[in-house]
Image 1 (tube, one colour):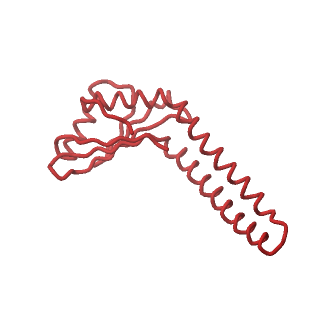
Image 2: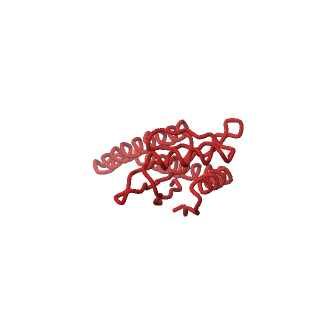
Image 3: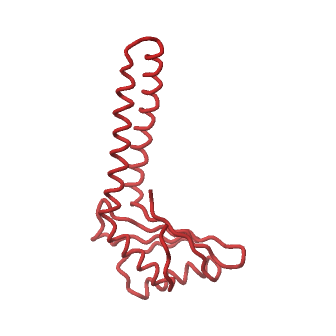
Length: 161
């Protein structure tokens, strides 16, 4: 559901992290950079941030030949991601338990009203998926801008999968 990329860079993890952060800060790019050992987060500036605004999380890992592998994932801010995750878990759990209840009612010859609840939960999961896709479309321009900033920092084109 979330766009991602992966590619190889030269240098150690810390050298690569420092290089990327310095290049972004030197360019005066319109983004907020948070840097931790082995991790970089690019976010839309606070004054431009909306509910659907994306952020780019880049984790840096040492590769076998002395370089660094960068794994990037675009997604919503942590509070929105948590909201989507917990809503999905609650609706999924209610759907599972109502399905079990409905099939038990059906096998005992009772009226299976639990299946109606599981159908509603299935509809809510579909609505959640569509809302996530809609949010991706609303944040596409900001995602593209973050990707351009990252590509200019690493000095090469990076394909999003």
